[in-house]
Image 1: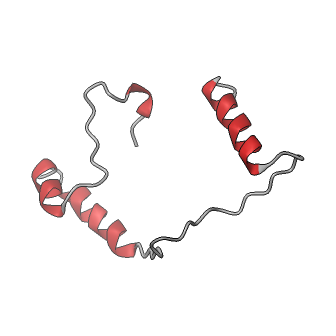
Image 2: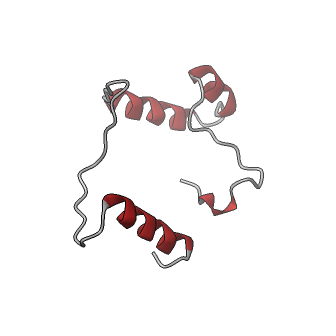
Image 3: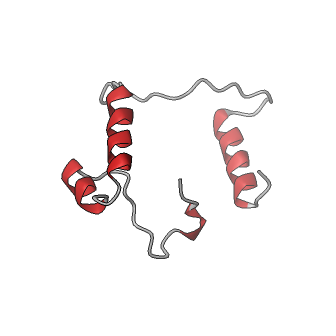
Length: 81
């Protein structure tokens, strides 16, 4: 995985490309393409459209979820976490 701290400095995002595009871009890395296919075949994710899904998260303070998120985001922006 690449470090996203230098995003916007000429790096391309290859996260959602077609199979044809992947074959074109990575033709010199057949092993990577084969491994990518193995990973894709092993994944089984089903999402119900129109339904929000969030991980279980326990706020251990007396704060609301919104306040907890706001505080952790502020800390992250300040480099504290």
